[in-house]
Length: 352
Image: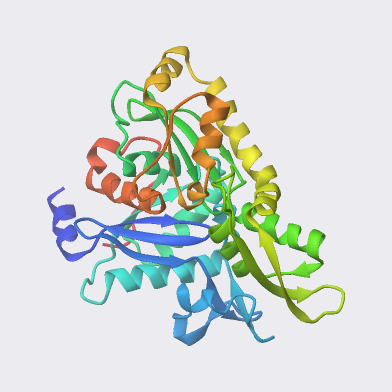
């Protein structure tokens, strides 16, 4: 125990929200110290990261969809899980190096949030990539639990807390009580599917091909799940005409984008209602009082809270700073490891 605390003096422990779209790193006492896109630029066919292993995050995101033939910008996380092991490891190593710096010569203890629905093999992949990236000890915590802790919900008390965490690759819905997840559902429908629905809409309606960055901008500027006022904005969209093959621009309305987003939004609402139907009667009774809290970047889609509230009849509120909830939760988890650490947490030693 003493040895461990001594090691702690020489390393900077961190909580990581390893997301499909963005990776956030939180450090005790400092808050969020890194928030970058989960994108890596590599030489095609080699998995060798450009710029001596530094073409990660923002630098790489700017290259998405714009790379010449010899370079590839990869998003190594798909639907909240690792789709490319080597590239994820390179990305994690870069982020840990950036935060940990050269001044700490002992690897950090790291808590990583993972989707609740992932398999043992997928769990092992996250675990091993963090170890190989230089972590001294790795703890995995389920994302809905981390989001609930980060949102400040009373997760250890004998009352039901319900969290809906909508990220880039997965939506995690969970009812938590007494420090454990009572019911949860993880669906692989989230922010990326919103973007995809917009790309499909532009293709079908306007015969126009747009990139994922443009789709994301449309979602943020005019996307919504419910009407949001009299004068809803229009937006100019630029892309490539599928018939002539030439670049062109067109204008889209908030109403048509809302229509395009209808399907993924409905699937998220169904996941929420399914979870509620599985709740124990006592926990369901608590939720009438406590309502539902939403976290994750994609929960900020306009009108989503009111649509879920209408579907469930419960009060739905957005957590403070929903984007960083999971990362903040991992850091709080790290500070209170002695409380949280139980048989379910996968851990291992790495050197040190």
